[in-house]
Image (cartoon, rainbow, N blue to C red; front, top):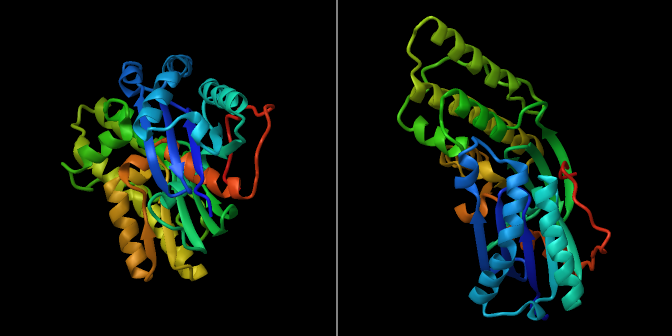
Length: 334
């Protein structure tokens, strides 16, 4: 069978990334240009600035990726691009750029759901084994999904309010941890012990999650203690939050593995870079004699390689899109 090379574009938030992926598994070349330092000055991503920086940088990112691969656009078999979910302005930059490349070089265009991209990050340098249980954890999503085959998804449960990544960011602001908040909390938690007693989220036997109550409790705790002039043990509170939040993820993964009998579990999304989460899910997988797969750190956060990996099964099915493709700000996997 002929090798398939897909040029993939990812601009859903504040990373401009382009990659060339071979056969859905091998990253020939990748470039990720982050805007993190720029947005850190504002305490979070500013959509207008993000889209402007994508526009300024995307041609340079393409050239760098092609140089790394020692290839031309004419050498690839298809163009893939993230079209949802994300910041509309940022998505549109990538989509319009992909359309131009597709038109000029006569290459089929493939649209990819960003969340499904995170799942397929696990296919890089690896082979997905079905059926599998996917825990998707990011700034906007916390979902448990059964994947029976390529692009065959069954949603078990999702967040009822805040996603875990969003909770990390909001608690980070309360603790005066600079953007990005997630890695900051993880680092601070290493200096503390989980000595604060915090409410447990959604203590039931469903597969749903909720982090709004936990976040609100911490906001009120910090406010009340500050008003009383009491010291906030920041490292201990960070450790307590992380332990409570991730314990709920581990408990629901354990429940799903026991109830379904599935023996393959993957973790996907930006929060999958968290080492404490990786350790806890590994413990759950071992307890259930399940195989755990988590992407390399470079493929956990937003990147184009995962988009190229997710586009490969669509290419094999000839599931192409036309130039009416538009951006969508919100989406689920199923």
